[in-house]
Image 1 (cartoon, rainbow, N blue to C red):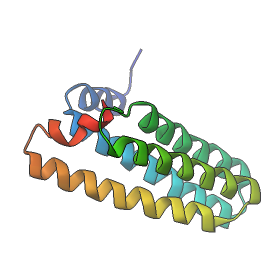
Image 2 (cartoon, rainbow, N blue to C red):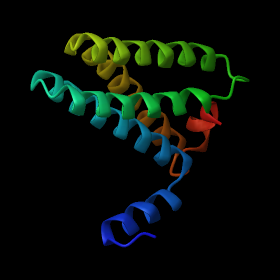
Image 3 (cartoon, helix red, strand yellow):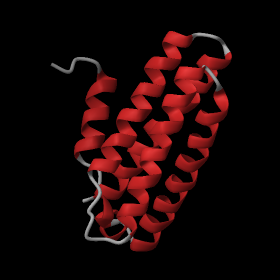
Length: 133
């Protein structure tokens, strides 16, 4: 049961968002978790880094499994998502920020690309997210 007003707001915003907005929310979450993981590694809080990078990996995996492979670009996105997850695992295992920073760069670029596609497609942004099912 959702009790806090913030949780109610979050649930409502997810339920009323367009597919394009939901996709951007996923990217925003992954970006936030990778940034937090980088900060945790820098601060040598490895348990927190593990948790945050794991959450980012879960989002990236979700992005990967929702791809619609009838679009040619989906295979390339799948490979990039797989590589980003590899980078996050590498950062987590080696306790190094460089691989996570590389993954963060890809996430930021992709998020910006999807935001531009959604803007170009209009308010519904349906065309921009078809590749993600």
